[in-house]
Image 1 (cartoon, rainbow, N blue to C red):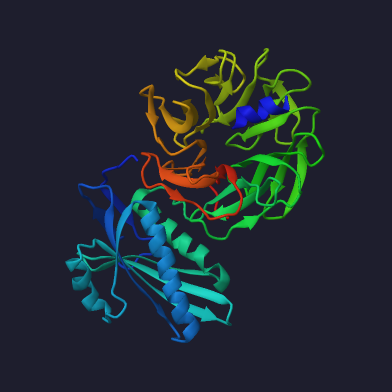
Image 2: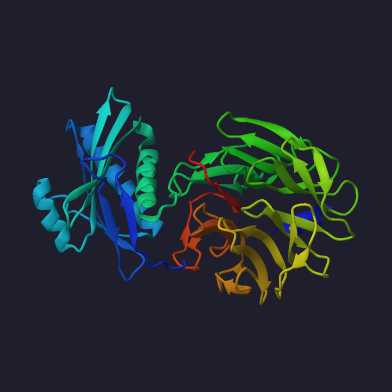
Length: 435
């Protein structure tokens, strides 16, 4: 829990009718596809990815590639996915009748080619089953060892063509894990693959937060025996200290334009919120008083900040403008923590203690309504949003130890992110970034 840490040291389903156009034109006019239905998911067929050269490595990779793309399409929760019987061989002309019998609206087909043993070339095509017209075609390149990333990119492009919004398959989730007996930062793909340890400090590292649209994390570390703020550039594998003021420097949130940070600093007195520039220098003090203010999160517009304060006698959610003005409290009933703004700005996810356990809740700002997402499964804490606002990752001890889970914003479809040793805490989901 963020506030405890400070104290110790001081969807909704959507019915849609969508149109999208071809990125490459195959006739005089662009081809448009209109899909409509009474459910929120379109039916999509996924055919085999044909190995161009037909050798063993390509055949194996084509199966693995299709399986990865299939999982991505299913996890997106935009599609009902049908796959072809791998033993059923047919040419393209006969495929349309086959898929129409399955109730499929669009078909994804593709090819796999390995060049010079290390280079991967993937061709992908999207067809409208009813009209039998080619909707979209493209080619993707990469390395064989990074084939999953190429599949993720194709998924995200398909999602964008159906919804107009960026997919999340290329996103990553960072979190803290204590399997080394110290708390270190790890990062993993959104689907739980490619787990990687980022810090090897043998120190206490906590509360990582992504910098928007950058492969960078801001976090608090005891590397120098004081809770200091650091920024880690993952791509360059370099870090530097941002704020080393004596006392607490934690936790933080970066503004959408990356020009400012909001952090909790104690400076020898009560932990209050301060606005910092992106070099870590104090711009202004935002709150002042004999209480603890922590867990700040910028709104998507960058004009407001949500945070936790115990000024009411116990930790509650407050919102203020970015200059510290117009502080107001959201009406909640229990001990609250870890508020975080949704990417669209209409909801705030947070943790609240209710009937003895911490659970994940949503505060619907337009409706001024609280929605409970988890219940009866141990303690559930530290929510973080996917960049499309349709999923939330969080930490839960429902298995007997703290691990990272993902769910839809309606509380359904809960899945464990990754199997790890030790316990995992405080996930943070990359926003607007493909790593």
